[in-house]
Figure 1 (cartoon, one colour):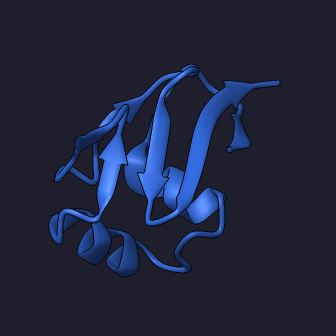
Figure 2 (spheres, helix red, strand yellow):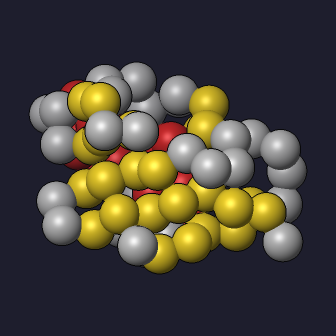
Length: 70
């Protein structure tokens, strides 16, 4: 599991995927999310704009990211 630090209290799912380097562009994030390949807290998430807070876990394939603050 990889911790991804955010500056604010929340971050959108698409932004987190870009910040963590999972995707390069928002369009890639949109495709992954709409295809049902992204899970938030072990549940499939189809909204790229889903607000994430520290402690949330995002899984894409074998990679798991945990939202954290600095």
